[in-house]
Amino acid sequence: EVQLVESGGGLVKPGGSLRLSCAASGISFSDAWMRWVRQAPGKGLEWVGRIKSKNEGGTTDYAAPVKGRFTISREDSKNTLYLQMNSLRTEDTAVYYCAGAGSWLGYWGQGTLVTVSS
Amino acid sequence: DIVMTQSPESLAVSLGEGATINCKSSQSVLNSSNKKTYLAWYQQRPGQPPKLLIYWASTRESGVPDRFSGGGSGTAFTLTISSLQAEDVAVYYCQQYYNTPHTFGQGTKLEIK
Figure (tube, chains in turn red, cyan):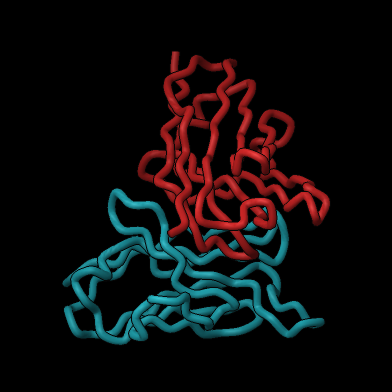
């Protein structure tokens, strides 16, 4: 059974930083293209970014609202995906999901809530 | 960026009746090289993460009931539920994975009439 478990969410002040983690099991994580998707309270889904497998370059892509502030990385030895979020803004308040693993999003975690507020 | 536009924003259907949700992309999501359409549909029940229903525009994910079907091509797509069940109450999203950012539609809320 595939499991994606996010952690690291919480309350942070505007301008602050937070690192989210996503622990994966039941999949060949090193071969997986992984994403972060967020959902602001009461709103729709927003694609945050993607990291390819290391075999395919390990490159990243980001949505415009987070580019330059967020960094996606992976640690295949630990089957873990990360999202480093810097210069956080109130509009970054959302549930953050990790998802993967092929071209479409067949697997999703339960999400972790990030609240940016003073 | 490719803009995905869904209609209607909300829909109320009687149990056992059919429902159709529309999704339009601002540019084609058909890869002419492999003839594949890079469009997926997701269901999000209240308080739950999204669940994949359909990929390649019309391929049903394993375990998804056959009352769900996806159709369309180019820039216009549909998700059809042939006979609504109570557990189908959810918000439905389309997503293109042709170009990054892999944008989602704004969602369609499906309720029981």
